[in-house]
Image (cartoon, rainbow over all chains, first blue to last red; front, side):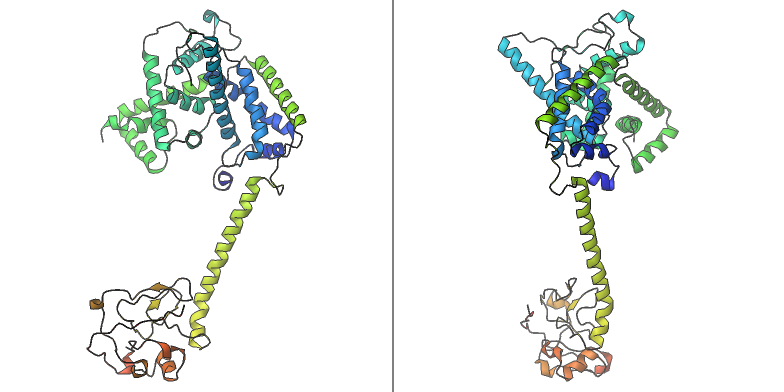
Length: 205
Length: 242
């Protein structure tokens, strides 16, 4: 409400209002609009052993169910990525519990492979190699730093929105954002330790 | 400031996170510093690289559309299970619209109050002059709207604390140390000197509403020809009327 009065209006407000009225097709339009970003975001946060499509579906179904609770204090996109953030954390915890129950050893985080490019990096275009390498280095950052970068680049949220979502001070967030870039730059400048496409060794919470 | 102190600011500038004065400061610094300009350009290149690389991957349309179909089917199933999900707010209006109405109401009420106060400030002195409204007995109290007698220049007893009168913006101005004040009259109200020009004093003579003004009040109007007694004032209990 405040955003729409004093700030930029939410571009999704028409569709959101229609969806709140029970219009499934309006919500379909929202799904089409944000599916790609949510998918990218969820895949960047989850181990490839977790079925990301299930989590994505869970995100949108939760959004549909919780839509009456959406007060319009933030943009719909921010709210949706807040749900995605929590669903990823739930999925990761569930996955860890399952692993513990099955008595599996701790295995390194295995990031999602690039879509449709197969497992052999030799035939990949340069852009895909670059993207894969960046994602691998992103996986080497601390959880807090990576979270900020993912919300900024994948979800395309701005700083005040990320600050509200993560409930951290804006100045702290900006410093963390800066540190994340510095560390990423450092990792990128380091000599390559493992070939492109190899899993990054990071566990996620 | 040395260039190394600019690094975080340059980074934030390159990401469009600076505004206003800091942005102007960085702009002016960048014009004269080649080293910082190179740093800034490097951050811009890295930002563009990350933005390009972290876009949704091309070539994943088939998988994406399958995933979208799956989500749409799940939503429809959910909508069928809970058809009443529209869960609209009680009055049917979305929260944002209701909130907007609420803000409009609050702003309207504030404007109305302001208009009322402004009108009162214009009308009230005239009514007092015409004798329609009684003069305030809180002579030491002044307000931006003319509430409180000031034309006689009379000052209440030292340390007098008077709550604001009927007007909402009344402020107490005569609180202070006794030593800072001129001595004022000590006798009863009937013995207080009066002038022949001031309407307040005229009403005092006529036994009007200001007869209840505390005895220490005196008129300092030049026409009254009275002088203040040298004796120190005595504390006089004041009834505020409320």
